[in-house]
Length: 120
Image (cartoon, rainbow, N blue to C red; front, top):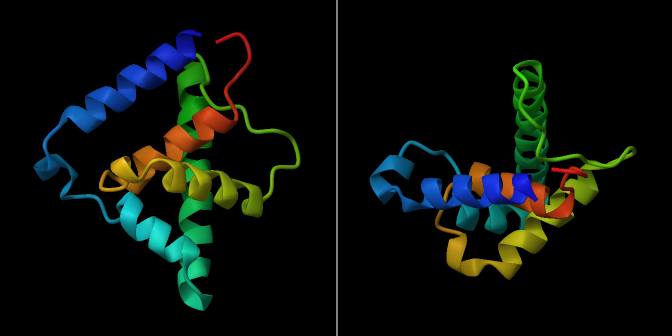
């Protein structure tokens, strides 16, 4: 429960910033959704972005755990790139009103919704 409150607070604070703050981000939810639904190169770009976002979370989670914090996302054993992509695409499809926000924040929200850690 605490992790959901943290996640909600984090997302609200990130989304509350002006779009000027987001100007430094390379991908938005709109561009990532387009890539994920695209063909050939765009689809590979989507997979690469999603894996990178998940790996960055894993890195951050390890750092947070070392400092006594709690991990928010607990992906299952055997998680595949296809599953990660499907979770992000579903989140983007279900939340078109948020797609103008940075893709990294939206991918994090998708992973946290799909695989929350128990007892958080």
